[in-house]
Figure 1 (cartoon, rainbow, N blue to C red):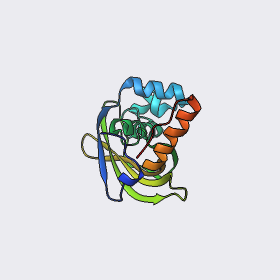
Figure 2 (figure 1 turned 120 degrees about the vertical axis):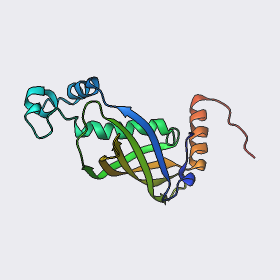
Figure 3 (figure 1 turned 135 degrees about the vertical axis):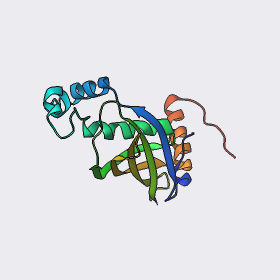
Length: 169
């Protein structure tokens, strides 16, 4: 897929990213990165005595996997300016080492900005386990360039580099 711009999005559009299997290394690396060594994530003996019977993957790792899977889609590759926040994020079921998850993304809103250079896109994320269970879901708005905004940005960057501007019809 190629990068999309504000004008390309409309409420109701849906996108899906392929699967990613969560590994032991993912769990350990996220514990190291976050500093979260809670026994439910790090102590197999402790976790065996819980209702889950094994260690759980950090909920925040699920969020990170969702945002990472956006790169598989490629739709925001050249147009994204900034993620504006997360809302209503729900952890509906545990993610376990060995689970394969995939992302479903729905566009919920598209609001043009005043400048005409960008607009706000509302998105709903669903992280789904291999058995079809939705393990996490939530919303995140993102600011994206319009096509005119992207052209203007390219021209500004070319000026900074001292390159001649392309003549546009």
